[in-house]
Image 1 (cartoon, rainbow over the protein chains, first blue to last red):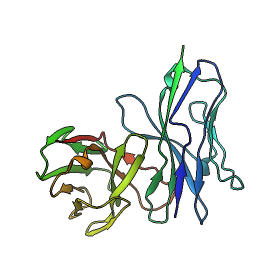
Image 2: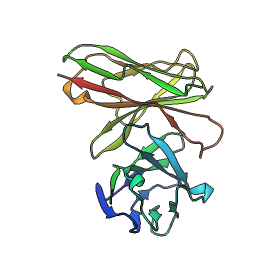
Image 3: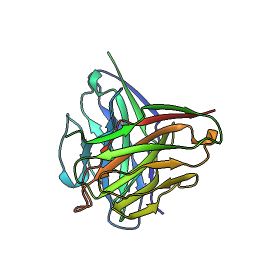
Image 4: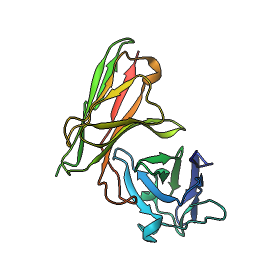
Length: 108
Length: 114
């Protein structure tokens, strides 16, 4: 069975500090992984996907198959990064299995 | 394009009542799905559809029914509401072609069952 685990429910950092939101997964096949973000009073939206190897809003995420992880990182956090972040694993039915989410709070 | 729309935004029900949450998309997406969002549990898949006339169960289907008579609409029915169904419900859609396609989410419906 596939599973996505985000061990931290809340992560609080100061502006300018580095951020790492952890995500671990279990999946028997070749994983397709995503990070979705939900800003206050906005709908859930895609932040980035591992296949694109992109940097969005300064965030990057590297798939580590050996450690079965897909941690989200940003070198310098901004206040506007405060949001709920969800790691998600795509399955063969084109649906997503989500982690429990991490609330990021960036303090001034 | 309106994207994915959901109605109503808020709803309060009494235990045992029934209701339908509406979802529509105007992007001609084949795939549509319903999730519920509960604190600490992320989003869990209730039901999904890979095209008109085709539906299947997700992780937490009990107490919910769906149908997909058109590509655009994917309503979620609560047959007899229970307090455990108090949650925020999200509808999503995506194009079928690639597994890494983005899912587009609606604004959500906040449901309270008393």
